[in-house]
Length: 131
Image (spheres, rainbow, N blue to C red):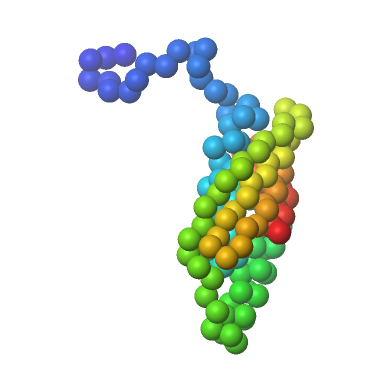
């Protein structure tokens, strides 16, 4: 490390490998929030493209289209406040992680479950269920 290098020195013991299943944990809450924002049609459908499979992307796009139709006929706009709580992670094996969380809105709470799988390009959500 040179004197001009301002990066902190990390020891190899504290480094987390990108294929470690626990690297998924900090991604669960932001992905859950963005998925619900996509469904609410508050965020572009491709905003999670790097973290989800095309099938999950199509599922979110379908639900966003339904939201647009509902909003056009009723004028209902969901509240913008959304908090993610109760994140849980279950490591199935070295290449599969299942996660869940609760998304709280002012008028309701939703449960979200997702399955992450390690692909050649990194961790991807392969199943996403929103209740």
